[in-house]
Amino acid sequence: MSGRGTPDPVATPSGLPAMADDSAATGRRWPGLRLMAVHAHPDDESSKGAATMARYARCGVDVMVCTLTGGERGDILNKAMDRPEIRANLSRVRRQEMARAGEILGVRQQFLGFTDSGLPEGDPPPPLPAGCFALQKLEDAAGPLVRAVREFRPHVMLTYDENGGYPHPDHVMTHQVSVEAFDAAADPDRYPGCGEPWQPLKLYYFVSWFTALQEEIERRRLEPPYTEWFKRWDDGNRAARRLGITTRVPCADFFAVRDQALLAHATQIDPGSSWFACPVEVRQAAWPTEDYHLARSVVNAELPEDDLFAGVREMLLVSAAGTPGGPAR
Image (cartoon, rainbow, N blue to C red; front, side, top):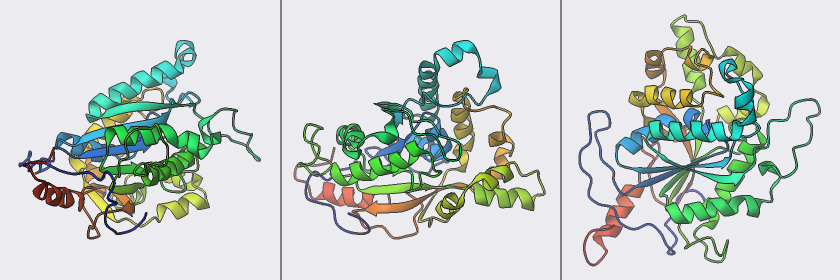
C-alpha cells in the first residue's frame, strides 16, 4: 500500500476528541493522536526527529519510540565515559541513558530485544556477528514491531529510508522491518498471535537537515563543523540526502530539548563534539524544521505538509461524527 488512497476497512483508527488551543510555542492541542518512531539503537531517537517528537508530545500526542537493539556493540565516543566499569556494563548504561532521554523528550520507549550488529569496517568488511539483528530473517525481525504496532495503535510511523539514513546494517534492517510492519499490521492473516490487526495511516522517512545548516554556517562565515561528515558520506548517502522533502515540521522551539536528549546519551555524545559546535540560534535560523518524506499514506493529505497528522485528524473527525453514540475515544 503506497501513495494516496482510502483506509482498509479492517481496524482503521476511529475517533478523536475535539481540539483545544495550546501554548504559544505550538498553538495547538492534539490529544488522542499517536506517533511511533522506529529506531535501530538508543541515541538514534535523539538525533533524528527528536524536536518533532518533543513538540508533538507537548501538544498531547502520545509518542512511542521503539528501539530494535540495545546498542551493545556501539563504541564509546565520549572519552570521559571510556572507563572499565562503563565498558563492562555498556548495555545497562545505554538503557539508563535511553530512559533519561525519553524523559527529556516526553515520550514512551520500549526495546524490542535484538542484539546490535556493530558497524563492520575494513576492505572488505568483516562478516557480521552471528545472531545479530541485521542477520535475522525479515519475518522474525518484524514480529516484535508488528506486535508493538498492534498494541500501541499509532496513526503515524517514522523510520529511515532504504539506505538507513547512512549504511549501518541495523539502520537498513530497521527500514525493512518498519515497512513490513506498516504493511502487515492490518492483515489478520499475517503474524498471527501478535495482537489484533491495526492499520497505521502514514509512514515517513527522516530527511537530513545538515545540508541547509552547513550553508547557513558558511553564509555567516562561521567555522563549519560538519565538513568532515559530508566528506565521509559515500555515494549512497549522497543519494539518500536528495530524498524529496514532502513535510517540514516547525520545531525550532524544541532544538534545545533535542540537545538535552542527545547529551543524555553520555557514552555516545561528547559535549564538546561538533554536534554542539553550531549555536542553537544559528540552527534555528538556518533550518527551523525537521523534515520528512511521506513514503506511505492511506489518507488524503495535500503536499507539501507542515504536520505529520495532516489528513489524519480530518479523517478521524469525520469518522467520529459518523459514529453513533457520541464522541470518539
